[in-house]
Length: 117
Image 1 (cartoon, rainbow, N blue to C red):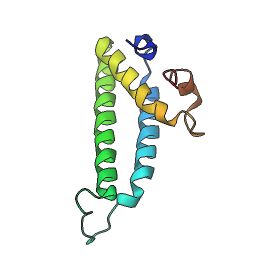
Image 2 (cartoon, rainbow, N blue to C red):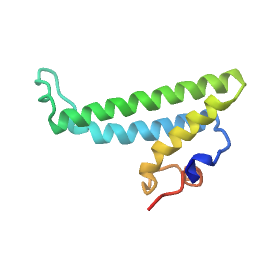
Image 3 (tube, rainbow, N blue to C red):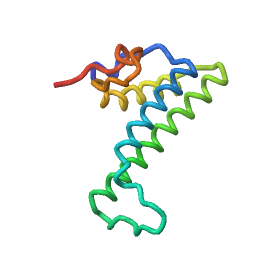
Image 4 (tube, rainbow, N blue to C red):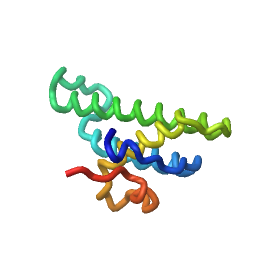
């Protein structure tokens, strides 16, 4: 088990989940802007760099949405358990890719997994 995988963070509030979801969505949307097609434009060529960026963006969006839904369900139920912890840890691991981003909410930095060299 890696050092970062063994660290458990306190679970977030609803507002913290929403803030992190919005941050991740904003970053993935910004990365996908070149892939957005206007009405009538042909699809990107299969296997092209733009098609791959669109696929990765869609996958990341689906993963973060799923993790957030799990967290919201747990927070709403009031019975926070291992599902909530695993979902929160996964969101923090995803967010670590943007640890140097000046728009990353300040409260997140202390929660991110240790950066490996």
